Amino acid sequence: MKIRTAGVQDLETVSRIHALSWKTAYRGILPDDFLDQLSYRRWVAPLKDMMEQGLEIRVIEEEEKPFGCITFSAARDQAFAGWGEIVSFHLLLEARGKGYGRLLIQDAVRQLKEKGYSKIYLWVLEKNERARRFYEKNGFTWNGDRLEGEEGGRKVTDLRYVLSFPKTNLS
Image (cartoon, rainbow, N blue to C red; front, side, top):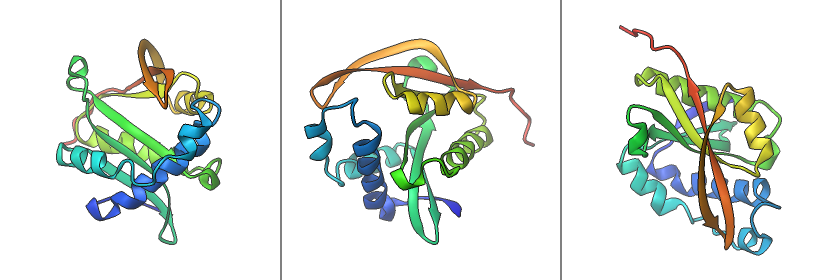
C-alpha cells in the first residue's frame, strides 16, 4: 500500500473514484436517479482548475490499484484565511473498513501541518453519519457552522468540522 501525489494524468481515475464513492456513500441521502446517472468524468475539469489554484490530490493504492483519494488546499473560505481545507475525501466501497481512510486522512493532516497550518476544516453532509463518525474518530469536531445547498435536486446541509493542533517549529 502506498499514498502518492496525483497529477493531471490521474484526474480521470480520481474523478471515477469520486463518482463511485458518491454512488455508494450518498445512497439514501441524494436521489437514486441523480446518483445513477453520475458521470465518471464529472470532476475532471473542476479538479484540473482547482489544481491550478493549488489543490493537492493524494491517492492511496495497493499493487498500483487506486482505492481512494483526498484533496486539500489552503482554505477557500476567506473567513478562514490561514486554515487548511480538506476539500474532498473518497474511498471505493471495497476499501472501507480496511484502514485506508485513516491512512489517507492522517497523510493529508501531516501534509497540511508541514505547510504550516495549525487548523484544518472540511465540510460533511449532515446526513452522512458514517463520515461524521469517521471524522470524529480522527479528531475533528463540528464547530456549529452549517451550509445549506442543493445537490441532485434535493436540499442538503453541510456541517463544518474542524481540527486544531499546536503549531510546531519545523526548522
